[in-house]
Length: 292
Figure 1 (cartoon, rainbow, N blue to C red):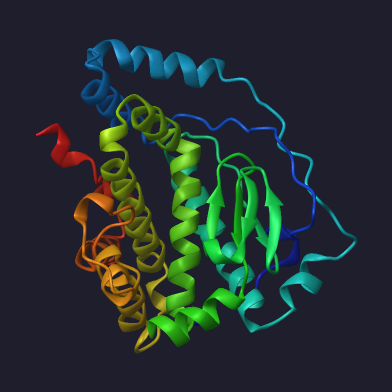
Figure 2: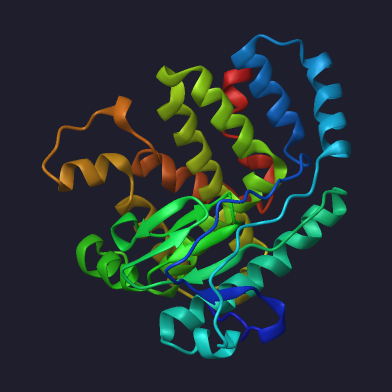
């Protein structure tokens, strides 16, 4: 995928350091509002008409909190992104993702803020606690950070057979999808539902992850002019390689659907494909079937 080189002033990127914070930034409720309302009605038995008013009021009165005191250095974005090929790819992808999602939020009248890309090696501290490269890439809603140890991509290619730049962009766009969920308030609502119904926690998490896969496809679809031959196959190979059932089989474990947290290989491919084919974030509602 031939992404344009990022503008150093257009992204937020830093190198992960030994310190982290405990502050939590608040996310607004907006373009995911209907999904949020109906999840709440499903889980808590609340009248949807009453919850719509609550959601609208919450969005209007939401306090703006400060994020954690991040570790900072004197390095410029260009210095950090120039570390290696993977770092540069991530910075280019972040700029493209910002450029793609910001207008979507603007057209919906929803406040948008950029996430921060955090590169680290081995381990670091995040607003969500200590992070280790063994966790793989992740998004922390507390500090709006996408955390990546770029050595993961070598492991992904070596151990999972998922190589190529589009496979790596898919991972980045998936984590960005969690940022979208955070900004719309969906992430908070699902976390609350998981706490109220622990037995459904994994199922709800799977739906969150599949939605993020679909959002990754939406981004790629809206930048289809930059896609090269073989890219889509790379994305599908990566989605298949990190399905829960495939990972369990490769680890010599019995496939246990109840233990899924991200979805099967078939599901992950299905939702990534849906985003690619439609380019429409409204088609990424993985909770639709729960509402009958």
